[in-house]
Image (cartoon, rainbow, N blue to C red):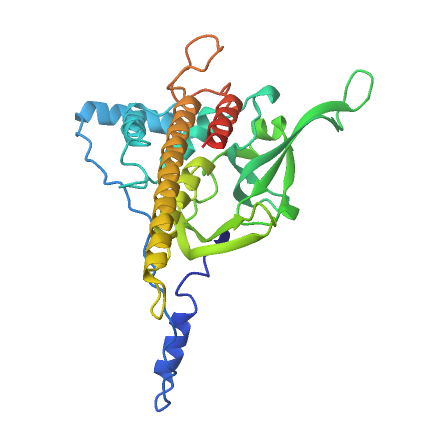
Length: 342
């Protein structure tokens, strides 16, 4: 996969060239080059109108919003919670990744608040956050490393350094050299806050160029095949959901063309074409199973992180939209095992 930034894209070089040609009146236009059609690979899920509540309930919700405005960890009020529950009920169903591609921005924000840590043992990899850097600028990012028992300069009774757990946060669209270290105290004093509570979300989907590649089992040499293509992913999708999107689009570009023109052995060519068709059908069948598996586990992650389901070996019933003890390690290891079986 090759990630494209906001300034690049399949038609990024064509538009400036066309403007230059139109401005240079009297010059002969250059011969048109080969253009490959590009279509949006995201189909938004249609929004359903929510029934209007009575005025008293609306006023109560407005008061709750005002009271909880400063509390970024507050559980959503009734109106917001109902809207999220409706979105979550459809997310990951049979239409996901086949008919519709849900923009999970509201879910991602809710997950960040639901699993937000208030103590060191609740810090977890992959947590999406807003963090303020050394120049006092807010940026969205992710916890990419947890370092336990790191020495921190603090006061103790013996005057020695206190071992603390630190996390390394990687900022979106920045090199890893700009990663910064934080402790749980930064989470408590407001230098690290839930996702998009300070920084704005990305306005456009993330685009990739995808290439098909296989490795020869004998020579161990990698070979490219099929047609490279563009794919778009919503920026706050999990790796599982983005992987399902890439696979869904990849299956469209696996097949090669028909038998080339010219003197060929028709019988041999048709026999080879038949074998290739069976291989492609089997490959696309496996891809379809993988997509179903990724969508299933992505939905389980969302439901678990938001406290809609109870984790194995956990005590008590989790509270909806507040589940800081959520641990996705078992879910991840199970997914890896089942994918390897395909």
